[in-house]
Image (cartoon, rainbow, N blue to C red; front, side, top):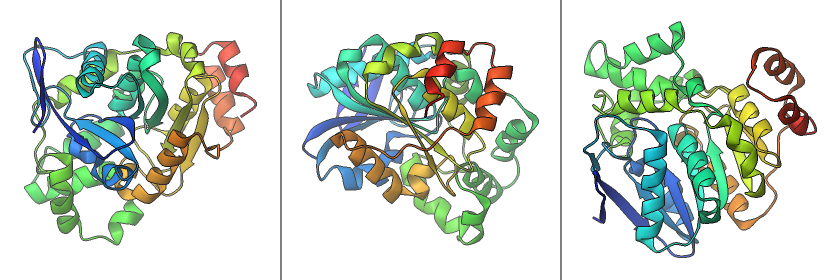
Length: 302
């Protein structure tokens, strides 16, 4: 059980496999073991590092608040602990925002970026809308079985759950998520707050030299597909992929699709890029005042 002791935290991490290094960064309320479907396959050819973000799972924190910059520093410290000069970096949701900050802070440490179900600015992920509030409340109200099913609805589309035994699925996922799905970890709201406060959008053009793939899930209610498209527009030269029929838990729902995509991206093979649909392109030009015209134009050819 490797642990990295920092000044204000202890980070639990796991190393598995041999080959080119890959750092996986998890999102809100999920332990590093949530990457198990990826590690099980990719560790055959890559050395995979997963970890619990500070305050989550078996990692601790002594700070009252969290910040994305702080968690990006944690990720860089783990690269040092593993003895890696650089690595392929994969981030999901909050982890994708942390990965962006890591790449901005230390671009020489990042061989490639894979940004899954994530955002160009944290406020998109930490937004408060009636549907988001209701989705979150359902994970905290009712019986334990009801709360587990509510959490599953955040990860998987209705069509998938209609053909699944939700009780069995929740029990199977618990070791990977790092907790009983009926329970919310104390650190969760601090993670969401840190996400909502973070915005490095104006800096993302600096990542154009890093091979980057942005992956959205068609039915994701949290990281909407147009958030992924916006992120792709901000990182010139990045590629956009949309996973059909998947939701926010695409790494768990369709690991075979995600794993092939990651393997191809790490090896430098072209990842087939989806076109950014014109209606969304126009909508964001009209409503997203922070999106610079040149950034929009740069993505128009994709």
